[in-house]
Length: 97
Image (cartoon, rainbow, N blue to C red; front, side, top):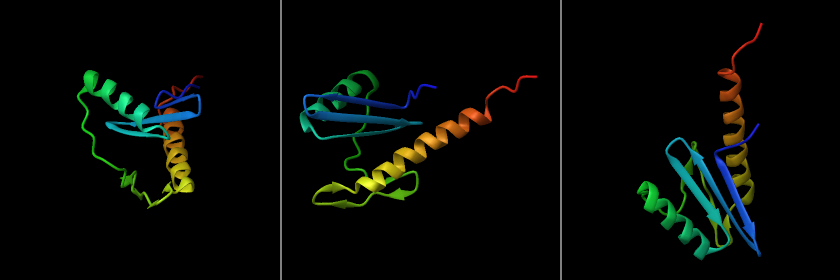
């Protein structure tokens, strides 16, 4: 099974993740310039609106500190998205026999 909602790019110490859920996009990474390039490319194609820092996602409040988003919360969000996608696939999978 391939996941077409989570895209990850890593190169030369830079990591960027793009998560798409319905009509929402979460873009996270450790390279501000790369994030700006991705946002610019997306905006040229889709005319996106940057809502700023992530505050809520799927009913979870995103906690921030000076070090950034709490990593455990980010993993909970990503795992919930992946589990939701698997559940949806199973719900709509044709039954053979």
